[in-house]
Length: 561
Image 1 (cartoon, rainbow, N blue to C red):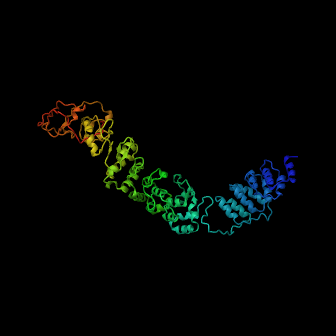
Image 2 (image 1 turned 60 degrees about the vertical axis):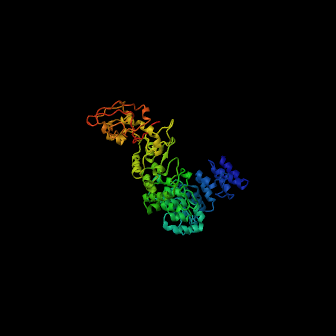
Image 3 (image 1 turned 120 degrees about the horizontal axis):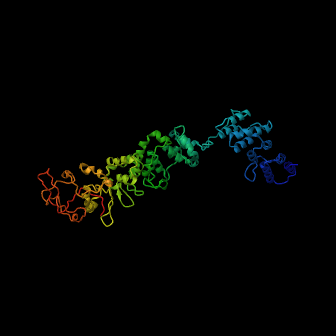
């Protein structure tokens, strides 16, 4: 006699509690070789197929997982009707193919009266559970489910949503500003429940875009509340109906700025501060965040109202009126954040701030690095943002800053001369009080520059200096890094014509040669015994001896003390 037969006979005299009987039945259904006699005897105790075992699974769920057709037949015979069986199949089997496999087994074991489907919602349940398939619906119609069964649905619950996409009726109202009255009516019935409800980001991305299939980069990943969904769509009426923006400085103004929503910006600035920085936005204020704005395909309502470029400019213009322009983050101003985001953001920022009309623009929009060197925006691009000139947009932005913004080039160390203090190589734009103090040091290298050994003050290469480029001799000089050693006073037949050296006066007492206490001390400029003759100027046969080397105040330079 086998083990299954012995277990079946033992069940005839089983005595125990209902929990014990459920555990015995669950263990037998789960076994590899279940005893049908034992299962049949245990079902005589009126154990329901939806009884839950100690592991949290129902008896019928265990049988469906094991896939034993004989056990499923026994459980269906003991069930109270086909409606419960079909609901259990929909609940425990995730695929339509599995339901189609088990449904005939269950229907074949039921008596004709029990096999009659009473619940009219079974057909709707099949449509909502498996919307992509139709075989199960056809099978249910074959079993006698009427296609014209009338089902009444109450409309009192405004949070009714679809099974998979979880799209609620309230969210559909946010897609169209004309449906705002419907949304207001729903809010009067269940205001708080609607406010806290959410929609998956993927469902939002598909419904908010006009294209057939959104790009992966345009899909919102996180779930959105209906308030944020209205903000992302650019629907201000729905946003106000959902009581959005009631909490001051909650990030709504930052989001409206980065989405370029001027209507939201204008309305939110009544309650939110334009100078409030948030950690969620890298510690930036709304105007700096607006530099990162990009066109978004799911801003359905806003895109239909106006173009992105116009919305971007209007948003930054509104924010600029109430923004403290002295604000800095990591030593950067709002203009530097526009530079970091490219030429398009820079053009919009220059117009929004009206930089060209600001009398203090050269002092206001400066950047100071860790070494204490002050940079104008154009020098910030050349020496900090893109020192290797790898970005093709850099030259374009520099031209914009000079022509549109009317910003002068500045690069200097704001310190007085002293031991260990030096100016950068391309120093330029010193304030007047510092220029006077640095003049004795900066002018000391005029002669070295004239012979091409050093770059002009404020220029990276000799060829960039406009004064040098006018001289036919100096314009042919190579760059500094490739230039060999040259004599201190090179022969130049057109030396007097160089605009850097004016014509010699008639006497040493001329005002062209002022008394200077520092030039005799300079090792670079020893006293010259005489100058070569220039036959083309008979009125000046030769230059007189210079007791001291002249000053040339028009050439400040970035050189060490």
